Length: 144
Image 1 (cartoon, rainbow, N blue to C red):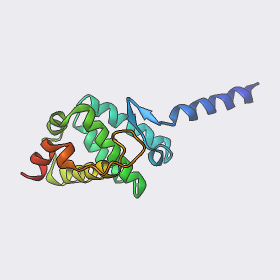
Image 2: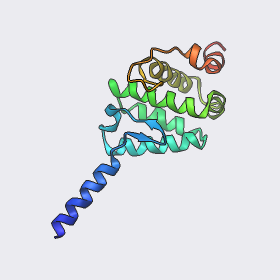
Image 3: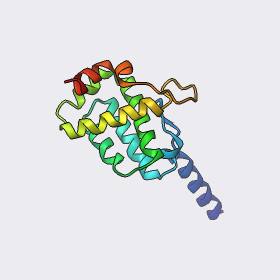
Image 4: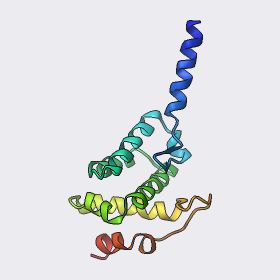
């Protein structure tokens, strides 16, 4: 009986830690299956981003230092989804005091997320460009 309860508890915990979508942000498989800690951190970043806290994007940069390959591309996709949801103006306000290096890192992830992400949710990579999708970000951060 105790073994059964323990096994059920472990299964419920494992399933609850497996993120596929969180607050309408799609979490790609490469990130979702890396670790429960990464999923937990990413949920915190999404929560903070929706509260328009600049720490969210600092935490995003720190998290991005722990991934490579496909997961890095997918983090870019997560970032672009967040920007679509909060809007360019709010995103720019939250990163206003960031260093140029921090802003450049975010721009790189935005570009990757737009090109390789599925921001229109049709299961096809979008190949979008920042100047078309986020012209205010383009003008403010790149064409200064």
